[in-house]
Length: 256
Length: 275
Image (cartoon, rainbow over all chains, first blue to last red; front, top):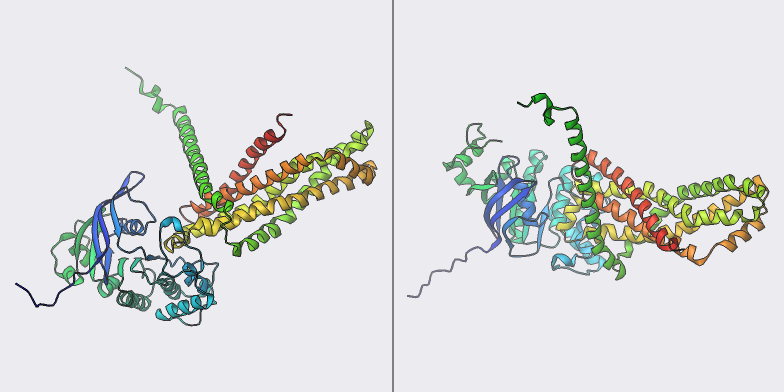
């Protein structure tokens, strides 16, 4: 029987993690994590401190090598936003944002650049465009130490998205920011998701980030995925880990 | 029954000896790890150097940084070293009727050993420590990680221009410091032992061979390489906070001193050992 129903495309999986293990000096941090993140999706990774959130993110970005398991990124155009911005403090905002366009790529990682050998004027145009996208204008010649924390964070966003990545990893993007600056950052996470159709993974503690920015939430505890679901499901679930985290309760299975 | 007071874990010496061997094992483990990593980095750096794959944009600034920072100190140290040697030997040699050879001795000591070593010492304390501090700060503030996620190699972007600057600047500086050391000896031997500068320089000229110049330049290239690669290895692998940046800086200086002492012997043996 032929069907005339409109075809629903399943969202493409951009990040595929399967049975990931990682230890540091005998401390088993990740104990078999499996996780899929689709395009146009923000996946928030939550959990108490030391549960392996940041390690998972560093394994996905290739900054750490895993001991066992599989990480497959559908697109090698990925980028990472760091907790304390990690801007290059000896370079101007323009040189920071344009860094990956101005400097020679490392061919040993096998990464292909979208833009290469661009003329200076073109780099400047792209840098200005990306800075405007995060609401910054006319600060190209300033240095990172002349900017506020929130502005540094936005510059680091601009630097990360300069090559239109399909996968964006955020390590505690709203930590240490005031509530209004946090909201601004959360809006940019959603804006980048929609404009670049990127798969985003956000490691966070912050309640507002989980509720405003997340499409799905993944709760880690003791190196394992304990619960995955939407923010609405987080309110209703009877999973004891998710319940305890949502209520910030001291009673429950989540202990240090 | 064994008296528990005499069992090894209860004696005063056991914790001490245990501490000694554990510390020794930990230190040597760190040492082998650092050497291994430095060798590993070299396997990336040397092919890039030989292929000339250096971003020349940063090279001039880095060479100037080494020159401006360390040349003054290297000059003062080598000049005084040449003066001290002249001070030690000139009167005695004149008394023995060998006044004509003071220049030869000062030149030999300065050219073969003092100038390359003093220059390296100045570069280690001014530049190696600064590199280690800068790179370790970049490491603990995640700037190195950020660079990797932007698909730029920290070795090629940060270390390679510094390395090339090191192996270009050190021989140039050594040539200058050698000349100043020999001239320092000339002034002192003239003032104290009344040796005519013409006689002194003539004896210098008779003594110095091409081989000496070549061995000194080789030494200073190797020293430049060792200083930059060791400082970079220690800097790029710092973990922790402000305290560890301090430790990394100290370690870079100590390690560079030790490496230079060992390689000075090896290279001297290779050049002169068979004589």
